[in-house]
Image (cartoon, rainbow, N blue to C red):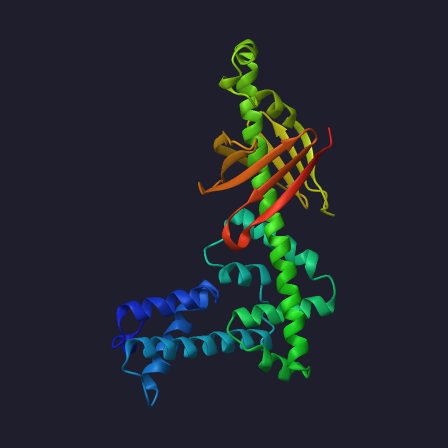
Amino acid sequence: MTQAAAPFDPSLRQSVAAMVRRRVPASDADDVAQTVLCDALAAERVPHDPVELRRFVSVIARHKIADFHRRARVRGGAIDPAEALARAAASPAPIEARALLRRVIDSLARSDRDRQTLEWLVREHDGEQLSSIAEEVGLPAPSVRQRVSRLRRALRAQWAHALAILFAVGACAAIGDRARHASRDADAITADPAVDPGARVLALAQGLWRVDGDARAVDVRVRGRRVDVSIAGVVKTRTIAHASALADGSYAVDLRDEGGAVQRATVVVAGDRMTVTTQDGRLSGTARLYRVR
């Protein structure tokens, strides 16, 4: 930050910088944040109350962010919807999740109309009002809001389903691992089912699975601890941090990604069918898989 921003409390400057970084490319974030603070200092009436001051600066930041993206469109600069929506999330998305999000977006934005609606959604995330966008494109504001709302619902549903697929990878890894260890001492399991009462059922998860109802033919191959999942031509591998049997016959599975982050899923196996359910806030979802071979 420049010397002009000094009169503001450090926590406010940090909040502005964080807000801008979530919505503007890293190469431009510092300049935009500096402009926000300078404009706030130059305003005729600056609130003295700390809460009102933060609201005041936040409004300026939203306008500056919207101005940045508007200028980028005029210059012909491309806005990456996947990156923009990932920045708008509550926490940074891992590389694998960003790749999935990009494919979800590609599957939803198949026509010029869809791509236009997606652009509106991104611009709204960047701080623009849908009413202003409607005025710009010459459409009634309710129509623009309806299209954005419909796309947002579809995006959330597809995104949750895609993340559930990732959890399914870890679920299969856990099942394969338990089956592998159980096979070392089958006699002990037969003599004392309490050792691992679900081991024999879990062994059925070895092989190739496919996510039901997904037009992209998402395949999950289980080979011991290693599970490869192919989504739209992109293959990812997961491992399991922990898996435990639950009283209702399902399994709690902790899945660790390549970055070390651990997420949990509940898994139910029934013959040639497997259901994986995630409970992760707005990213909750369910994936159903069937055995291919």
